[in-house]
Image (cartoon, rainbow, N blue to C red; front, side, top):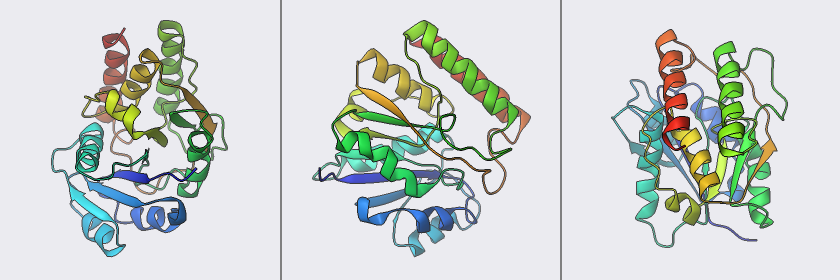
Length: 229
């Protein structure tokens, strides 16, 4: 099945990691790559431009805010994409595994695909202890409150554009991924998980690399889980 595939990459100060991400993307499967520079203080934006991808500025910090910027950009396009892929710019995921992420959608088996780091190969120390515990707790709550057996909140994911628009995504920071999963379940959008590989990111995480980031992310994830209950 031929699909128009657009990839959104939120990035903050990823001048070292981003070129690796862009180099490993299977461009034969992708129609456009959009890098959202979310208030970087380094060369992230100019490097994205130099690699020939679409580069957009979003000065208001927040993972969800950057993703919303990308969606707003896509909403102006004609024709609209068939599928939107979300991928981090820190090189912790393997960009070439977009092929695995897209496969269930191409086969008509799902409208949303979550890349599960817990079902795939994960390098030692790739995930911090707070990340591990937070993911496990969130997935436990999703199963018991929403009857949805996710194994991960991984940001590496794909979703059909009409389904994405129907979710009316709102979160502007740490609750973005789990908001998407909860809303997809509530709207009965067909979803699957596929195993993806995961390695230690390049550079320091803006969330799990600081105590404040961990606490804020944990609070927002729990808030979002109970907000939509």
